[in-house]
Image (cartoon, rainbow, N blue to C red; front, side, top):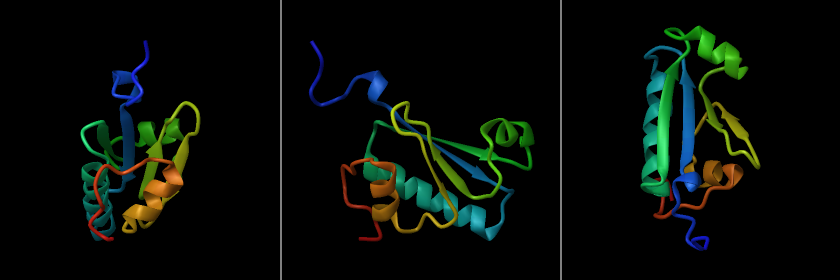
Length: 105
């Protein structure tokens, strides 16, 4: 029997943020990512990949610009490049429903 709430481990959301070092842009993107994670709730897991430290991971993923947020949903993979500060808009684009209101609303 399937769970209508979608709380199975398969429904975990993985957001992967590709950044370049510790620049101001990278720090802002990390902060915005944490806001997104809080808004989505416990089913959201995040990974941060520094392309300067691990260029092979960025190359393998086809990341050409930073910051890039990747949501590798098997049905609908999406990427957001650049500014992540409008949490509501980012979540809508990714097709992720927020459990709580993001800070920028």
